[in-house]
Image (cartoon, rainbow, N blue to C red; front, side):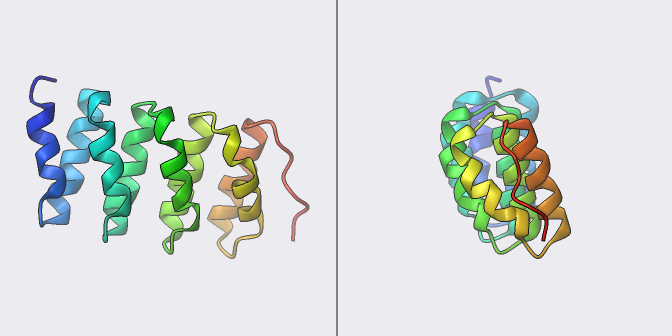
Length: 130
C-alpha cells in the first residue's frame, strides 16, 4: 500500500485504460485513503472508468462517498446506473432508497432488476411492476 499515492496519480492519465488499471490496483490494495481521488473519477468522460470508480469505492467500503455515487443513478449509461445501485445497496445507503425506487420503472431491464434487488436489501418495498 505504500505505492498507493503513486498509483493514484495515474487516475488523471490521458488514457482511459491507464485510469481503469489504476482503479483496479487501488481496489486490490484496499487503498481506502485514496477514496477522495477515486471519487473524482466518478465524473470521468469514459463510462468504463465511471463504472470502475463506483466499483472501487464499493469494494473499499467508502460509505462517505455514497452521496457522490448516488448522483450516477441517472447516468446516461445503464451499466453505470447498475453499478451505482449495487454499490449503494452494499454500502447500506438507505438515504438513496427514493432515488433507487424511481429506477424500478427504468427502460433497461438490468436497471429495474438491480433496483428491485437493492430495495429489498435496503428494507424498502419496490413500487408496483410496470
